[in-house]
Picture 1 (cartoon, helix red, strand yellow):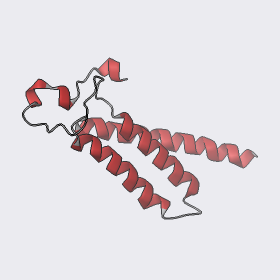
Picture 2 (cartoon, one colour):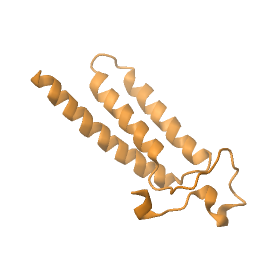
Picture 3 (cartoon, helix red, strand yellow):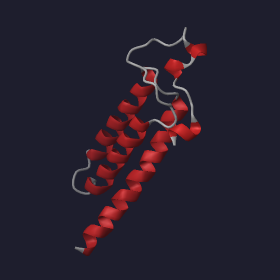
Picture 4 (cartoon, helix red, strand yellow):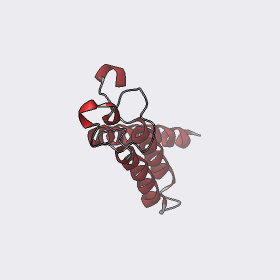
Length: 109
């Protein structure tokens, strides 16, 4: 998806050079969507759906963990907020889909 969209990372955008504080290496890849947000929200939502009935604290812990990782991508200047928001939505969708498949598979066993 990133090569098809082709959005340059904020830390590589020359018009933002004066506004970005480089905290980490920028990388040469594209920005949209945030793979960190997608992956961490997918894992968090999967774990929440699978384990919530047995361990309620998984909900705030999972959401907080995925949010902090996602926010950090904006803070360090490697993603725009929209990149992270789309990654969050994509990851949540993936997490819901895979956890639903997992639970249906477990019911058959």
